[in-house]
Amino acid sequence: MTLFRRLYLHYAAAPVRVPDLAPTHRILALLYSPEEAALALGMPLVTRGRASIAELEHASGLAPERVAPALSSMMAKGLVLASGRDDQYRSLWDFFFLMTDVSFARLENSQPQRELAQLREQLWQAGWSHDLFASDYPFARVLPYEGTLEQSAALFEHERAAGIVNTAEAIAFMSSACHVAASHAAPASLQSCSHTTGGYFCFNASAHYFVAHRGARYVDRAEAGSILEAAKASGLVLTAMNQSERIPNVCLCCPVCCIHFRERRESGNSAAIAQSGFQPDFASADCEGCGSCADVCPTSALVRLPPSQGAEQRPSASVGLLRDACVGCGLCAVACPEGAVTLHRVESVPIEKTTQDAWRAFEAQRRW
Ligand code: SF4
Ligand code: SF4
Image 1 (spheres, rainbow, N blue to C red):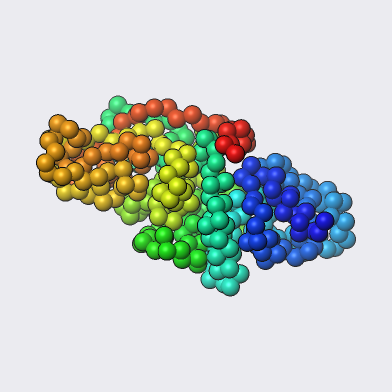
Image 2: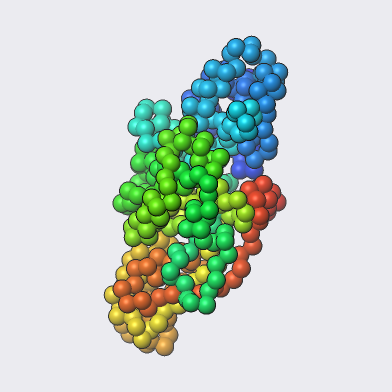
């Protein structure tokens, strides 16, 4: 079996599987030198553990003086996550992270970056997205915008984007991987994107890693707050990993380019992202019928109703809510100039504690 075939099979053990297709193999050939592929085979995937430098030397059979340069090169390409004191431990990013986050974290417009984006799009078109999201346990969830909730609604800590950001010891911000990849591949279905401010917060050890290796920059709490306010004003959706403790990221998702929203839109897969647990109420008496709420809704859950329908049949004077389509983001409430929309809690969405728990639940609930 060739080295790269073994590398493919190594990646194929991840919770989110890797299609055995030509674009996948081209991606591996594009990203790895043979020495790097040999090192990668000794590394557990990031969801499965980590390996020390000594273990990597032993597993790869590379001369010790070849290991450090190869690891540095892999770090620079975003193939590897280092953790532990003095970067002693390494894990291989799962193919999912590699192709959705890590490889597009920089705003480079290089030929390999463009080719990677095009290959990723080919995988998407070949049905990779169905496998990505083929679980009833969504690995990301929507967070509601605070200030849009009814007064009696209380948020858990894992639902408070500002709280998650503000309690981190280190905060880094970087460009939206989905947006960068979409801009390189330019599929027709994403041409309507007009957002320029999407991005991704990561915290603590991840913040240091992404600043060192992936083009992120540190931001202080004041700037993070400003970024969150700008996201609200420009119609981006707040999302995070679907877990309740030590949340590693908060995304400011462009609902056009984000892969979770794209899967929801193109395949009708509501498990592509978890609903926030909130939905809007409309105060009909305050509604002026401007339609701003429907205009900003990222999932087309609000539809303008024809004038013939009586107010008693609908939640506001001019819009109807498709409850199954609503993700509970709160953008409709943000957009309403009359303050006629508030979010109320509709259910407690099942949620795991840690990243590992979330991946276990994802794997256990796979549909194929
Ligand atoms: S109706 Fe649309 S904008 Fe309002 S909370 Fe639901 S998904 Fe968000
Ligand atoms: S934005 Fe507010 S006022 Fe305008 S249609 Fe929606 S609920 Fe009514």
